[in-house]
Length: 134
Image 1 (cartoon, helix red, strand yellow):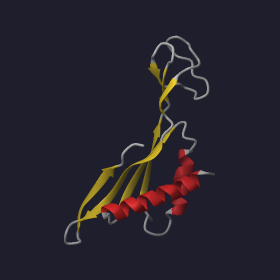
Image 2 (tube, rainbow, N blue to C red; image 1 turned 60 degrees about the vertical axis):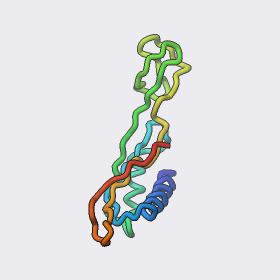
Image 3 (cartoon, rainbow, N blue to C red; image 1 turned 180 degrees about the vertical axis):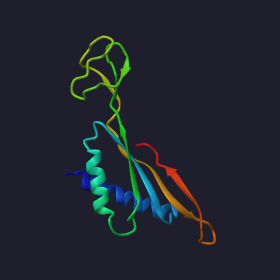
Image 4 (tube, helix red, strand yellow; image 1 turned 45 degrees about the vertical axis):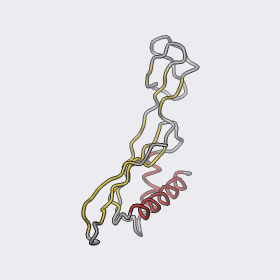
């Protein structure tokens, strides 16, 4: 189950971002998981629960957005979402090979929602930051 090591890496990134931006309490983390990323969303959720059951991230919600596979036909240029990730006939021209993958390979932290302190040290607001796409 390599998802556990993926979650460990995400936790390290979250800690770095928390320190860099002066975040108090992390509320929620949103992750985008592409259909071809090789990570199983349920296994990511399970790994998150295991690795955040104690400590500073206890109780932080993990939201996983499953990104479908989207391709463009290399023959006719039609963009489509294949039903199967191994066999992808184009619905327009029936071409099977040569498609360009537009999305579905990604796995990244999209957003970290946290409480942000003001100048007095009090929590001023709960905000979120969009992380740049890789």
